[in-house]
Amino acid sequence: MEAPDLLNPERRMLLQMQGAEVRSWSLDEILNSCNWSDQAIAVGAGHGLENHGFVSVEEHLSTLVDLDDEGQRALNNGLLEQRIWDWVKARDQATMKDLQGDFERHEAGPGIGLLKQLGVNLEHGVLQATDVAHLEKVLSQRRSFLEQLPAQLESLDDAMLDHFRQRRGLIHQVDRTQRTWTMTEQGQSVPKESLIEQLVVSEITPELLQSDAWKEAVYRSFDVTLESATPRTGRSHPMQSLIERIRSVFLEMGFSELVDDYVQTAGWNMDALFIPQDHPAREMQDTFYLTQPSQIELPTDLMNTWKSIHETGGETGSTGWGGSFSNETSQRALLRTHTTVNTIQYLAKHPTESCRVFSVDRVFRKEAIDRTHLPEFHQIEGIIMEEGANLQMLVATLKTFYEKMGYPEVRVRPAYFPYTEPSLEIEVKWRGKWLELGGAGIFRPEVTEPLGITSPVLAWGMGLERLAMLVLGLDDIRQLYISDIEWLRQQPIL
Image 1 (tube, helix red, strand yellow):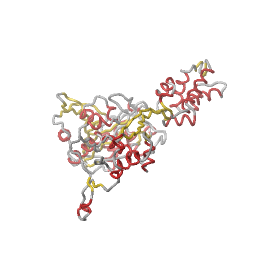
Image 2 (cartoon, helix red, strand yellow; image 1 turned 30 degrees about the vertical axis):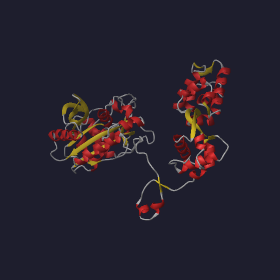
Image 3 (spheres, one colour; image 1 turned 90 degrees about the horizontal axis):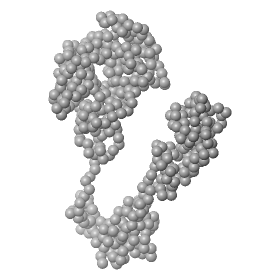
Image 4 (spheres, one colour; image 1 turned 45 degrees about the vertical axis):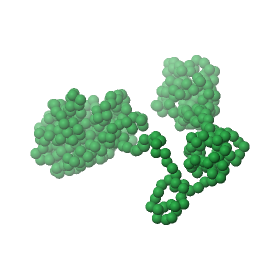
């Protein structure tokens, strides 16, 4: 019989199988016999031969357990609980205080937790084991388990598997499919002369038509009645798409983009915005302060200006906050808690130039992660500084911005922010309900006058993630940063 519409890889594979006594072929045997290095070619050729009934395929599924990154480090350096137990044995009295001094914080707590499960107790501040023999036996078993990896899933101890599955980054499973191909009687009956490889044209090009080669060419046939897979194309992450959409709206409204550093001083981040130095937002549980550098030097005259404003109000007509202003506190280094810190520095460098600037960038706050909070998120901010700017202009700009974003119904309500007066909350109508999306206002004299700014400054901002949750219909902010390919494919193009 003839070989119908076989591709060259299929012809080569079938020819090699006919020329040997072997009836069942492994992947490695196919690769070596056909002189291939790419497994995909062998699997594809085998699949084609199977469709024609020339070979049969058997698949054997297996699961391999192997070391992950943390598991490899544990094998090289010792498991965390083993290293801490070795440390305990090397001392007459192993105290928790000494342990915290010799081990990193992220190791000491989890390590003690693992040892407590094995009978280690903390008595009067000293670590002691109730059954040393049992403890060291389990530690030895755990190391032996890691040493035997990689190994087939069914050959491993179930209890050890359960233990290490609960510990992040130590082991991972790899599912493997092993295939074997067996030639059928129909495949054996194909004449060898019809399995000679030949040049097959699958695409007609101008170069082919310009010569006479097309007259002698063999053309590959395609069955257009077969179902085809839907092509998957690359696309932007919905967050990035939303950022680009916001950028285009701002640029269309005549704004320029502002990009600046994450690391700032408490002075520019808070003092310049008339946030009192005893405000709760400055506490370490709310702000990420840095240790390197722990301080960033600021000009003394600038800090003296802030000191006057904070303590007495300076020459702004304000009474200030009273109390005592600390230059050391002002120079503390931190990760910015809002993008206004960069905006106010830009205005300080250009105090007399009218401007319209915006930023869409990352900010950092020491938040506990839950369905509505992240320690790192994006903030959207717009600023207008020009002579004659007023509240009516601010409201009109807000309505224009949100209308261009797809929210034609906008309202504002009175609010309070430390560095703006008057202050507004912005609400948009979404599915019949009013939802708060951000804040706005006009910078107070205590903010602008010390920097030599004489024109009114209009400002507004909102959280990007909150807007993204609204647009994508999410109720958990963490969903935005989970690498779920299927979920990403299903998201609308923004």
